[in-house]
Image (cartoon, rainbow, N blue to C red; front, side, top):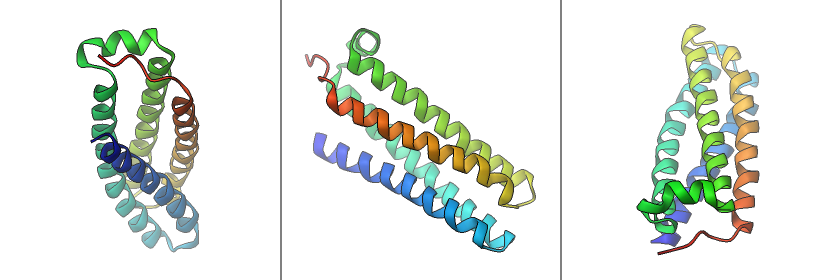
Length: 144
């Protein structure tokens, strides 16, 4: 189960970040309506990927930290604190994605206004990857 959760989690993360990079690089080269459609299609897919990432992340956490000990281990262990930081970063990335989507809708479908928050989202995703790498170097929390 752990391997499957990790596979799905990493696959969704790679698709989210890689897809966003491709879209951010492609949108400026397209006419405005096509760029907006591409960004809109990506945003819908990214929402599903975020849902899968959230579900697999929670399931993986509960496998490592029994439900009754999660709150304590998030603040008492280095692994938990870094995991908490990753969670906050992912929430920030989701907020940037939401902002880009709102700008896309608010600008009458013009992609130009949504590209700036999408680029910030991409940079924040790079930070999430760095924090995730740090998680792999830390000892796992106590398993009961």
